Amino acid sequence: MFSVGEALAVFTGPHAYISPSLYEKQESVPTWNYIAVHASGVPQVITLGDSPELMDKMIEDMIDTYGSEYKSQWHSLSDNFREGMMNGIIGFEMTITRLEGKYKLSQNRSHFDQSNVAHTLLQSTEPTVHAIGAAMKQNLETSEQLPE
Image 1 (tube, rainbow, N blue to C red):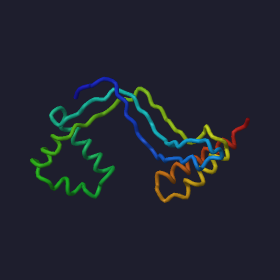
Image 2 (spheres, helix red, strand yellow):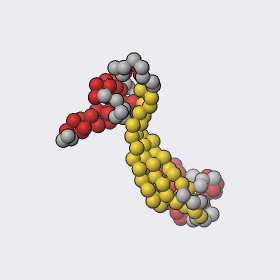
Image 3 (cartoon, rainbow, N blue to C red):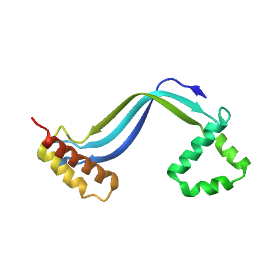
Image 4 (tube, helix red, strand yellow):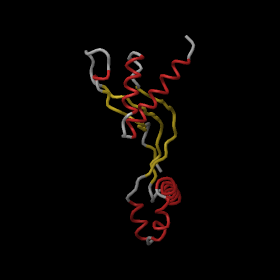
């Protein structure tokens, strides 16, 4: 394992294009609403040659998390094939030194515009677009409950 200096990992959440036609004022421009997390830290590169046990654990954890139905097939592959595949993988762990949540949910717009955008996005069958609409609605409801 070796360190490569500080890095930034960006984890994107739901996002959606926002048409200016959804705003009250005609003189508006298109934008994008999003939710993301920025994690800064020092990554440690992990290869099969550096740490076979850790690489094996990372692969096992990934299969358990994202494709548990593949686990028996992975274990039925020949050791030679599995090792060849793992030699082509460069894993990493990152010690987080700073974590920032970021979101843009039209909070710079009027309550009317925010409600209209949220309502429109909630009508979408696209999961990420719908999720931004739900986040906007929740953000509006929370801000309405805050004392002035």
